Image (cartoon, rainbow, N blue to C red; front, side, top):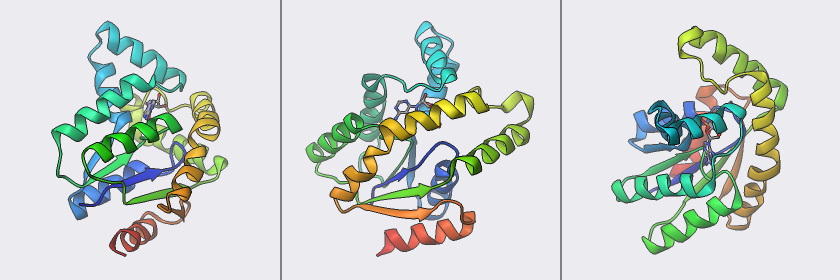
Amino acid sequence: MTNIILLGPPGCGKGTQSKILVEEKGFLQISTGDLLRRTADTKTSFGNEINNIMKKGDLVPDNVVIKMILDEITNNYGKNFIFDGFPRNLNQAEKLDEAFLEKKIKIDFVVLLDVKLDILEQRIEKRIKEAGNENVRQDDNINTLTKRVETYKSVTMPLVQYYTNQNKLTKINGMDSIESISKKINTIITN
Ligand code: AMP
């Protein structure tokens, strides 16, 4: 079994690389963003609450996200996981470690996709244009992006040290081409 975490700021290409790993290597992508958007789409009062938090670019409370993740892990036990957008802070990382320890599985690799902020803005603008009016993500606008990047810097970036201490982290230039990043990820996970 191989379990990977893709780490990096919003718009760095975690989703794109996750999908390649799903298609080419049979991983199961666990994206907390996708799970939360599905919950938001239910339009229940809980869904609306989640939607409001996401629209602002804030993080959804840990207890909600951690429960979602633990359910996914339990329901898909035995598969190779790729975590996309989780963990987002130290508490989430510790809870994931605890859950994995209990299930006698482990995180094998943490890949950091390193991207500069101005490049991120260009990517998000492109994503907004390409999605058209109907499919655009409600949190894909420059104001929300700025908030999401600030959140990334203050609460997610400490995970770089956390996983470096565990000897699991490899940093990749997230500004390289999709193909080149994908090749580098393949090299990491096959070594
Ligand atoms: P993403 O699709 O990963 O960019 O996430 C979109 C939004 O979902 C984020 O801006 C947060 O509001 C929420 N979200 C996703 N993952 C998490 C997480 N691990 N913890 C808290 N909130 C999250």
